[in-house]
Image 1: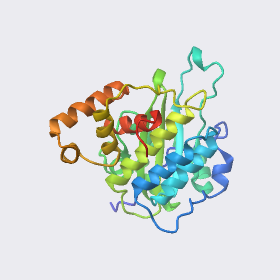
Image 2 (image 1 turned 120 degrees about the horizontal axis):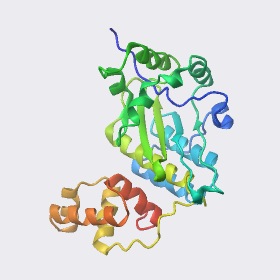
Image 3 (image 1 turned 30 degrees about the vertical axis):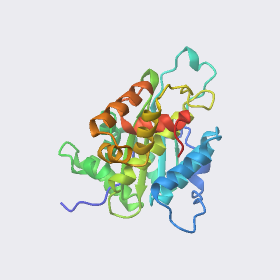
Length: 281
């Protein structure tokens, strides 16, 4: 069977959902940029712009504008599970926000695709970004499920990724970034999209509009140096050469950073370090 390009179809709910009307009506304005900057610089610009923003829709607009600069014009964020606790009494959980084509949103709900979407089914069991191409090619994906992806591609959602975003108290959300073109999103761009999605997820889930991460994380100077170079895309071997230390020593410092920032991956450590103000974007 000829394989059509893939698309994210998971993020449209029925009339009872709280999908942002503003984001679905209007295209996201691109951040003015006469010269295309490197992704790392664009990520820094996004973090700077979002620093003092609290309103979820404005944060989403910034996220979508950043993704558009990376050639992903379609962006969506959707909480899948929210389990309130005592500290949530005055806290409204984030709503679904997306800028997908209105025609596809209507088609998705009218056909009840929210109940059979294979992307949602598969992303719940992952920690890493999920390519839609992998969902389509998976032997466990049924023909009916593939048909959803094929239809979505006809509406301009042809390739992309979905990122799982776990939170405290078993809360869980996903973010998706899609391209109009058939080619897959490069792995390095996925990393930047994951960083931006995690940053957005942290901000919109903070009851007071802040991440809640402690400002004093107790990192040593060497630990700060190592996580700074990680944020700039350097490997442990590269960082060792830059700082004049062994690769094993670099890994030791980065593990300490992850422990102190309460995370188990370099990517999340970078986001938390940025949020703490330990490193500058």
